[in-house]
Structure formats: structure tokens, C-alpha cells
Amino acid sequence: MTAIDDGTIPNGWGSVNIDDEGTPARKNVLIENGILKSYMIDKLNGRRMGMASTGNSRRQSYQYEPTSRMTNTYIAAGEDRDEDIIASIENGLYAKSMGGGSVNPVTGQFNFAVDEGYVIRNGKICEPVRGASLIGKGSDVLMNIDMVGRNVDRAQGMCGASSGSIPTDVGQPLIRVSSITVGGR
Image 1 (cartoon, helix red, strand yellow):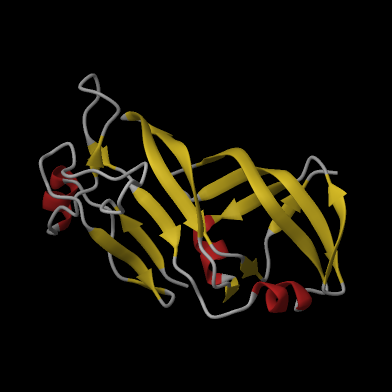
Image 2 (image 1 turned 30 degrees about the horizontal axis):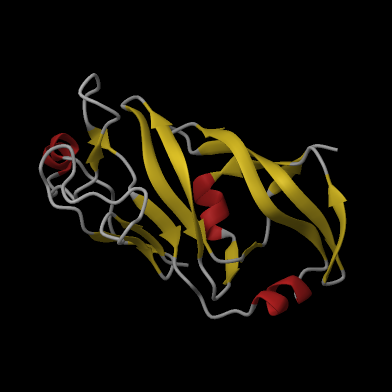
């Protein structure tokens, strides 16, 4: 799995010429083939870490202090066909559309609502589910991604944090997570 944050995508909702500290935006490979390669870094945290800014200092407006934030963040395309990913699942959940949620930035614990989801049984997408949520720890889930599809879909959204709400693109291809906690009915 490869994760990228790229502030240079033409017409990307999170794209910027320069970040809120004057650093040019760039493409940052955060995770490459499952190995952590880089971070999203602003100047203050860069000094603390002994690393250069990556063009990720953002804020909603001048009412907020800038801090390290995402621009256009996505999981890069892999080599697996979507139909092979679905066919490989004996019993699971196909989360077609995700909703709101929250992440504890200190622990990485998260919960996100599944707006549209379906049971997968014996490699086939079956009946819809309602009220499902995905619960876990980000680092654990990343380690459990074992198949990555070929087609990346990106969508616009807002990222909220201590420095306000900022526009972003997020996206990924179809992925298989071998183990995750699913809550709900």
C-alpha cells in the first residue's frame, strides 16, 4: 500500500501553490509499499524533528495558527482487480460510501459511519446493511491492508482540526482490510 499527500494536483480541492508559511506545495509519498517514508510537516514541527517543511502548513484563516495538515491525500492504485478483491472475501462488509467520524490524533483510534454498505458472503455482494460503523486504530488497519485495487476515486471534503476547516481531496481504490471491527446492527 502506498499513501500520498499531493498539494500540486491540478484543480484538486486541497491544492495550493504555497502553504500558509510560504513553502511551495509538493507531492509527498508518506507510505511506500507499506513502509513509512515521510510525514506532513510544517516549519515549527520541522525544526522540532530536524526535518524540512513539506508544504503542508495550513489553516482555515488568519484567525488560526498554521499547523501540519493534509492537502490531497490518497492511497495510490495497486495491482488487484476489484472483482478479485470481492471474490476473495468469504464473509465481510463492502463499505461503498463512508460518512462522518472522528480520529484521536494522539492514539490513532477512529470511528467512521458507513453511509452505504453491503454484506459480502462467499465472494458476492449481498444485502444492504444500515447503521454500520468502522472502529479501530489507524496503524493497525494500515497493517491489515492486503489487497489494493487499480482505480483511484477521489472526492472533495473538509478536514477539521485545531487550525479550522480546510478543503481537501481524499481518495483510494477498492482495498481489502483483512481484519477490522465493525459495529452497528
